[in-house]
Amino acid sequence: MEAITRVQTVIRFREDVLNRARYKAKQQSMSLNAYLEHVVEEAVKPQIPKLPKDFKIIPAVERLSGIMPAPTQEQLAADDRLAYIYNKGLAV
Image (cartoon, rainbow, N blue to C red; front, side):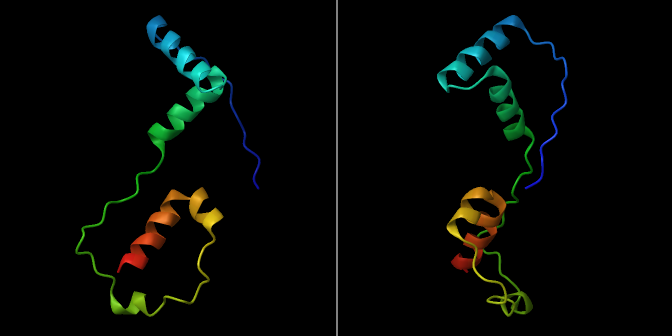
């Protein structure tokens, strides 16, 4: 696993926003830093594209199914994009 590098920074918040963030962090038994990092991470994470319900996988791609082993439940739980793609493939 790759080491995570953190950079110290200074950010200005309105006092009422900071107080609400402190309250939410305390409710979740998190430090303010951990809570803010989590909130920002959620806000900027890549969005999983929404495919139309009638989306069809082309036959050439369907033939590739089974080449790779199915992901484990742990892998699916750790990666939302993988879970989305894998579950979409099962629904076809």
